[in-house]
Length: 226
Ligand code: SF4
Image (cartoon, rainbow, N blue to C red; front, top):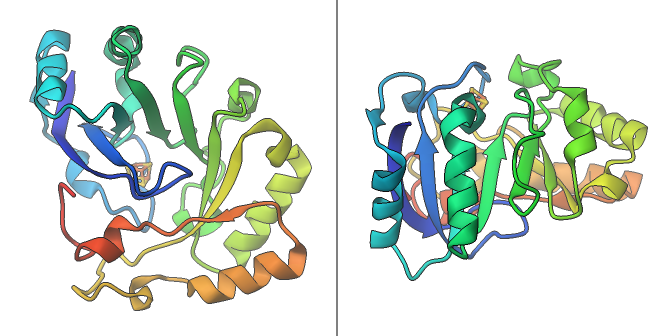
């Protein structure tokens, strides 16, 4: 499989936020979200066998939580699924962060899926594969990255239409971060002020969770490999 990096850090998002985690970042993505902070994954990458990936992970233990991310990790499904099955057998706790565009049926149920639904301001609205809703369990989370009021209303209406809070364990609303973020570790780098998003959530009584990318406050927003 083609990788960009394997490293350990603090999980920045989801209900696992704040936990030590090993990140396996795979190369390639078939979407082009307007606010993407991972464009360096679109090309290149280095090739590793399954054994080599496992060996790299073992160097980073005793951390036992692993996230597969990208890019879009499900583009390398043929190699990724057997690797996941092996790591589950080895007793690791696994997560995958995915755009929601690729089919997720083959992801083992024990893997916690963090599934994006792309909102209009991303430029990739409509890429979500509705059949992926049937794969969700209470161990999974659905995430909307919100850049403006239009994105919020899209997320709210999608949640209500599909009763997302009954399908997934968490629904996450995450303010979009500016691609040209400054070195300052503050909310001024958000395209939407988190306070405004919270006010909308409270006004609508939305059963969703505010999700801040905490690694962008612990370290400088542009820093890679953290
Ligand atoms: S799906 Fe993820 S990696 Fe791909 S363009 Fe969108 S934000 Fe970037």
